[in-house]
Image (cartoon, rainbow, N blue to C red):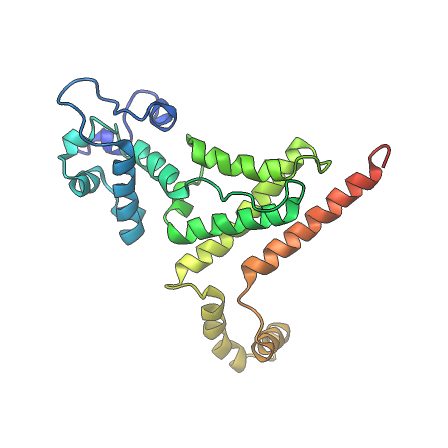
Length: 253
């Protein structure tokens, strides 16, 4: 029989315990027994190490307990289940967003740096791409990332929903490129795709003439392989057009 605590403890569907751990004092949830010898941060980083090396599927409470040198049952004194463990791991892996080096009103370079910082975290911890899908409790670090993106657009004339949509669009692009990067060892997803498609196009050039021409042109020009840069630039170009239009239409402008 599977221990239900492996999937997340508590009678609140795993939300209340996770939120208490993410936003609480950082003390272990257990109140009885021996004096605590571990910290939640140490436990989270042990889980991150397992997931970084072997993927999220390899993560278990038993494995994490072994990494920190306690029994599985002892680990439950600190973290009630795997759901809560993963929530702590996301918080540890994402960390704080990059500091804004650009001027406060320079929204475009701020968002560009933000998106690249997010991409770097996803590449470093590719299991997080799977873990952050769907409704779930979020910790202060993750909300700080959202805050930084929305705050970069303050004063640009965009509504709250539009600012959130800009952040969501950037996250979607970064996630897509990071997933492709993670699918190919060491990155180079676009190059790997081109290598796989090239033989097919060579044999079926008449069937896919536009695609064959595009790949041949990219190879000749030495272009391609820059989906992150290209996508970010085009997204921010569109946002800039919207920002400028709102400023022109604003009263008194």
